View 1 (cartoon, rainbow, N blue to C red):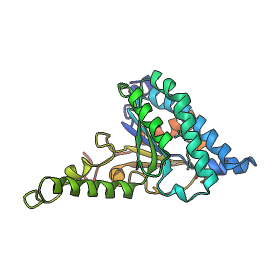
View 2 (spheres, helix red, strand yellow; view 1 turned 45 degrees about the vertical axis):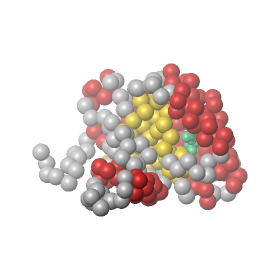
View 3 (cartoon, rainbow, N blue to C red; view 1 turned 90 degrees about the vertical axis):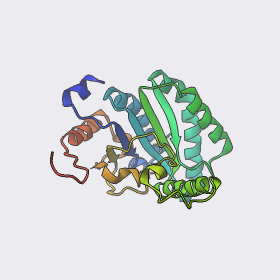
Length: 244
Ligand code: FPP
């Protein structure tokens, strides 16, 4: 745990960020959108180090949603190339930070060579235990729930039908989520002014705290992170109960 986390006492165990505003950041500078994504990627590298220093144990980012395939092909291809570049060039540095890389989302539609790289990055960092760095790529909250439901039905059928199995419990369904061991996000930050979840961590966000900022993702810096964490530290979480 870092000094900061000790002194303020309440640090999210799982911080999730919806990386938004790369396009607007680029437009404001008269640059192509892909330059905004590149700047966003550089920011993400910096953020992994800062998040680790804060004593956060799980850090997830929404980098590409199941709906992002609807963007122009040039932008989708550009993002896939950025993901490739990032994995090829940065995995060793992430590993050196003690971070384990995990990917979260559907594996269909992603280019096969990228999938190979993703598997390699996960294997290469599998034994790191300081931080789980979770990249949500081709992720959708509804898709995750539906994939879990279908996997559960298949598992029950394989066990000879669900006559004796009884009703499905939350715990049973959760076991079929993409990353069942990862705790729900405590804090979800969304940059760039939009006030919505956009299909991120839909089930898992049931009791998450939200923090919205107008800052575009490439401009989100240490001060902005500290402001979000300080705001979180002051929140009272009751999970539907009453004040203790
Ligand atoms: C949202 O901004 C951002 C994305 C859809 C892509 C985020 C990807 C990165 C920051 C690169 C990350 C790389 C890895 C390896 C995870 P937007 O384009 O929707 O911005 P806009 O709303 O201003 O148009």
